Length: 244
Image (cartoon, rainbow, N blue to C red; front, side):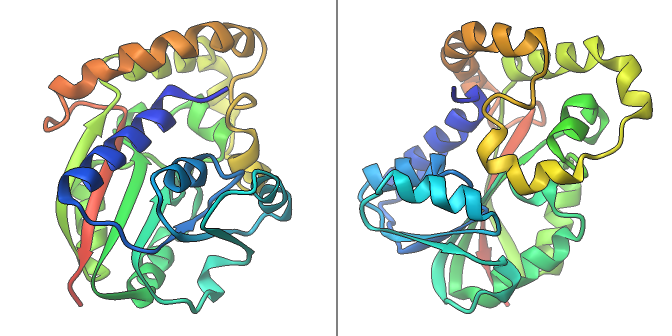
């Protein structure tokens, strides 16, 4: 089962890459079970998927993706240089997110591209985030500052998920409001986030509801095309370029 926001992120990336006609060998950080890599492979892209989880890499390898090499390694120890790095739904799981941005800058060639997808709106942080192992949600000013301080210039930001995904997340958090008061970030979720997040972020009745709702929401979420350049949204897709 694919989460609508994940599918939307890939749609935004594919559309922009095709528009710019720029296809580079890439590295995907935190590739998980290969959900994104499968789409990149279909596009004819060549690259490397890196994940610290052995189980995630095992699942990704079972998909036998064309032109994709998979590595079970800590991203901070990686030495491979590239022109394009994807960090999709990764930074929010990293306590010291600056270290990952600095490492990305170190691995990118001059004027290399970093593509990030993160949950947006810090005020919306709630049970869904803690249950998924998220340390934070990002506001535009915060992510802009962090990218600038680590040697990047933002080319473009897309705000995604408004109003459909925004409402769904709010509703989920509202239903678990009492739990969230005593909830802490689930550290173990970070190791398995790339494997389990298709279903296990949504406990109890929400798992059954999601199996019915997600296919519908995947179409409805595209309403956000009217708000991509606003400050409204449940997530951000950011295209940044190495400057230092």
